[in-house]
Length: 269
Image 1 (cartoon, rainbow, N blue to C red):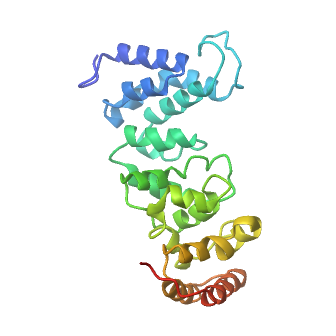
Image 2 (tube, rainbow, N blue to C red):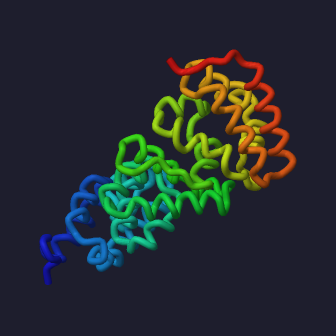
Image 3 (cartoon, rainbow, N blue to C red):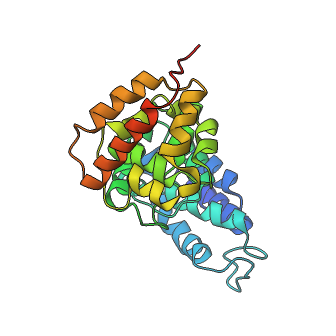
């Protein structure tokens, strides 16, 4: 029996098995990409044992059952994640956690090109539900890569805004914003319009990362370098103080307003 517009099922299974054993995520995606999402589910049973075995094994190990070839390396992990994503229904795929960032950023758009908004909604909600779920949340920041590439609109959800300031990878939020400048005028200003939650807010972020504070470094620098207008930020602070928030957050925005008010009136050129 053949999958419409694709090689016979047995050929698909063989190609998926070979790609998993060899740790070639591109080959997994190349095999699944032409197949309709609903039709791919039929191949999940054939990849699950090998994929689960790979993801549950230690790097550098070997498998006497030959589910992977040679020592286990990063390519095998990526191939296993792509295989499980690509053989899932859309609703199931949006719930898969602990994805490598490059897998989420590069392969979800290939496998679900018409459904990225569903991933954005699911990932924003996932962060909002449990911002401290370090392993499960891994990879959800891919939504900002997609926005920067122009394949989705910059996300504006509460969970996305809090994710940007509290979850963006790397030691420097400033550097991350420079790598994803599309968020500077879209996602980032939403922090003034949405409340924080336990475990994720501008105030909690600054308390945890005093070396790169939003109020003392990132926002003043955005103003100094003309990315944000000082008067706009002052208005946003007024808006932020009208949003129902904890007293802790209220104090942070009050202090930010005072700090911004004392800055020179820099405006865009």
